[in-house]
Amino acid sequence: MAANDTLPRGKTRSGWSLFIWQIGIYTAYFAQFVKSRLAYRMDFLIDTLAISVSIVIQMAVLTTLFSKVKALDGWSFPEVLFIYGFSLVPLGLFNLISVNLYRFSDQYIIQGKMDRVLLRPVGTLTQVLCESFNISGLNEILLGSGVMIYAARELGLQPGVGHILGLVILAPGAALVYAGVFLAITSVTFWYEDRMGLAPPVYNMIRFSRYPITIYSLPVRVFLTFVLPFAWVAFYPATWFLGSPGFARAALLTPVVGLIVFGGAVMIWRRGISRYASTGS
Amino acid sequence: MPGAGTTVTGGIEAAAASAPERLLPWGRSLPATWGLYLSFVRLSFLKFLAYRLRYYTGVISYTIFISGHYYIYTALFASSAPAADGTVSIGGLSLPEMITYVAVSWIGRSFYFNNIARELSRMVTEGEIAMQLIKPFHLQTVMLSEAVGESCFRLMMFTLPIVVVIVPLFHLRGPADPALYLWTFLSFCLALVIYSQWNFLVGCLAFYLKNIQGVLRAQMVSMDFLTGVLIPFTLFPHWFQTAVQWLPFQGISYIPVTIFLGKRPGNELYHALGLQLFWAAFLFILARLVFRVAVRRVIAQGG
Image 1 (cartoon, each protein chain N blue to C red):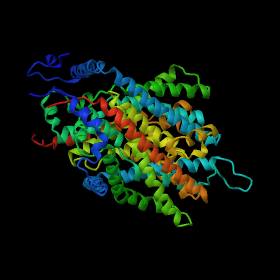
Image 2 (cartoon, chains in turn cyan, green; image 1 turned 45 degrees about the vertical axis):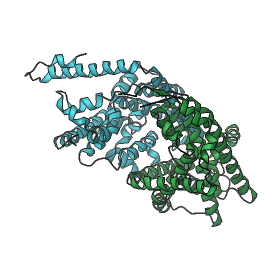
Image 3 (cartoon, each protein chain N blue to C red; image 1 turned 90 degrees about the vertical axis):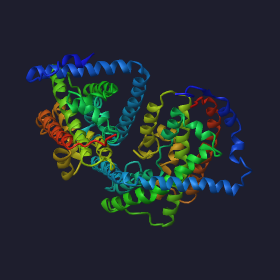
Image 4 (cartoon, rainbow over the protein chains, first blue to last red; image 1 turned 60 degrees about the vertical axis):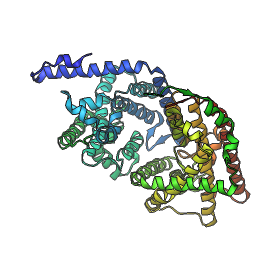
């Protein structure tokens, strides 16, 4: 796909034509990526293995905990399992484009790949995210859906069109929360070279966002809802399917929260770009 | 590039075949050999000291791990029915014991953890292994020495700060018998040997597999489960408890932590430490043998 052919010199785009053109760019990136990846089919299978093992371990942990109690703070085993399964879907969506966010400081700032990005007539964020397409995110989406369907059957939930529609709206909304949080952390590297590594502790917090947040103390709940909004990546949206009183309505705010968090992160990113000074290499 | 693509196998294989001689290549005395490996411990310590800033956020990560499990277990105990005397005990542990278990197992992990498997597989994939093989040291012992150096660094710059944060945060109480602190530390030192030798064995898979990343990730997530970091073994169903007793992983976390909790009175303490010693020696010898066979597969690119 020659994306450059679609951009005649001296012409500027606006509105719909810009949007359509951007979609074309994404498609081109994706097609290019799939071509390069087809050579490494084993990588995908090996990734499937790694993610399956981690899901089996997580389910073993939950099974062991629930072998001791009927319910954890009022949440039954299938309910907690459902939240876990749901959490993997937005995580998988996010993982499709997240790799470069983790290595941005090293590869783009220190090694100077950012210069090349700035020279091209496509949005900087589009390029950085698309250059890291990682198909193994599909593993989490598929396996997470499997866990979710199993849990739903245990709960006696009849999956209907409404549920699928809810998933299509809530999962990308939750993925935007992930993307926003990690984009904001990545953008900080424009000001400070990321020698400290803020991303790992934040990433490590994800695993605890998969439990019902009612088990946490009030300050932690407030923190996970408003400060580092990981309660919106799994717990709140999942309660919409579970119909939990008090939470199911809040769940519908997930896409709004996602847009706010991601929008805020994009603003930080743009400020960072404007003060970017190349290493000159 | 001139020279690139020239395959030199003969030299490497010859070097590998004479592996035992390479240990004492110039008639080096045993103390001299020890001194040399000790310098690897020192150099590794200094190398990690240069990157100590990275470990500050690690303290936050470990605090998150311990806090998260604190809340999960608190909810678990609150949700389970008390016994006749009004106390709640799960898997033979009371809630304060459970919190101590979680904290000590993560604190121990901050000490024994290393990335030998990843490092060895990187050497094999990138071909650096060839340069390692022509040096007059045994790579396995070098990597063990480096792991010891790394853990010395971790103890001072990582484990200690975590202890300073965690102990007051969760009002942790140590064992009444002060000797148990020493036994626990000794036990975690043996854990370091078991952990590093297991990792070395996993890294050796890189000689046989083209892509080892998935295996490394799978073993990373299973390790914390099989060592008892994620959940104390006593919570597992009976058959699983029996199974893990035959595996080396209990010597990495479950044994040291239960020693700290005073769950191994009298001779059981020495049995536990003896078992760790056995696994450490067994895995060390096994890794030596596996490496000797695996290294014959090395085909290095010249240039």
